[in-house]
Image (cartoon, rainbow, N blue to C red; front, top):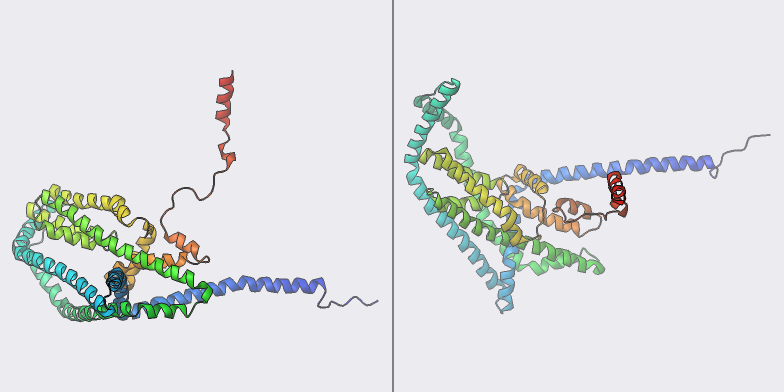
Length: 397
């Protein structure tokens, strides 16, 4: 007799189809993650190429979110929207102008002291070279060699420095001009943009989208307003410490270091280095320079562990590891403006990730360490150990 033919309904055919389906299922995640990496690479490329357009937009969006409560309060008192927005922008510009004037006067006073500081720096440098020569036998450079090397390096970089200064000045002027215009547009057309967002969402999900948008707004407002409050408090504490040490330009360095605290972890180090070096050159005392650094370290400790948690609470709960990575990525992508924007942007991304169940684990990864244990402790863990059993037996005896 003839052997039976294998048809589509036989077990061997079903096994072949299952194997092919399994292979396709295994290939699907690879394709998915490959497309995801390609998309992220294109996104980073576009962000780096369009920094001149995106940076003013991001800064304007943050400042508009900060001014929104004031504008809403003025509108609730029957102010026209245009007038309320103009008044809020003028108050913002006036505050920034006041800081610039304060910094400008302090910088002019510091500039008048620069020749004397330069002379003391040369003397201190000679003493340091002589100490290195006596201790380690290093060759001492003369003043003429230092001046010649400085002049040659300045001549080589003069053209590039001039071009970069001109381009930077032009870029700053264009950004300063564009940001108030963008702020006005964001505040004036905020209802229109919200309706635009609703048109992409089904009616049954608009409540959750509205909740997410309100959460993003509250996070950004809490971050910026809390940051301004922290800057004021840290400025006062830094000023008290530097005035007790009789540091020159104590108020300027206190405010300067506090403003640099906008850049997390790195700003305070830069803000502490400059007054410490000037104190070292002025007094020649490494102990006093170390005391200046100690003031900034102590204030930074108080700010990180007590001041910021009390003011901002857990509204912007980004863990230090995510903050450092975001800081590095922002600096690599957009430089100093990217470092300033990194933390609030990560906070916004965390709120968006937390709003969706499929991306909620990534939001949890960005968040701070939660209090308590994630899993309940098993009762079996409470069983006594071998030594415990032996102790109980001895007690019975």
